[in-house]
Image (cartoon, rainbow, N blue to C red):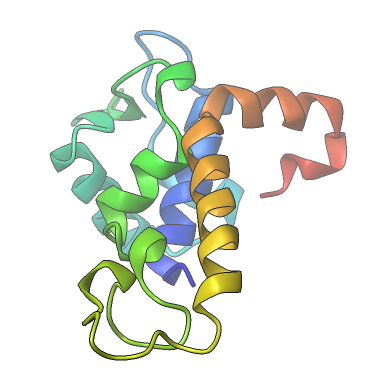
Length: 147
């Protein structure tokens, strides 16, 4: 499962992918109001994403946040691994360890075979889904505007 921090990061980057325009920043107050998120908590998340080079920020009256790359070049996978780490894509469903660290002399967990396939499909979805694709989907479904 994704952490709440990661879910907020995804929502914020989807928002920025949809509404930011080149050479303009969107302020934290606007983002937090539109998404219904706590401004201080969101601010910490966005500052971390600046450090991770997914966002750029500018301070001051016309400051705010924008994507560091084009929306077509940022995948959901990029965001998740920067916020939660790659464990979401490597951990066993019921064990606390990544499947790749499994001791071959011990049996695999009872759901390994079924979950391995699903985990691969989930990973592929996250790697192939860009902010641009989501933005286009939002255009198709007006009621999705409220992330």
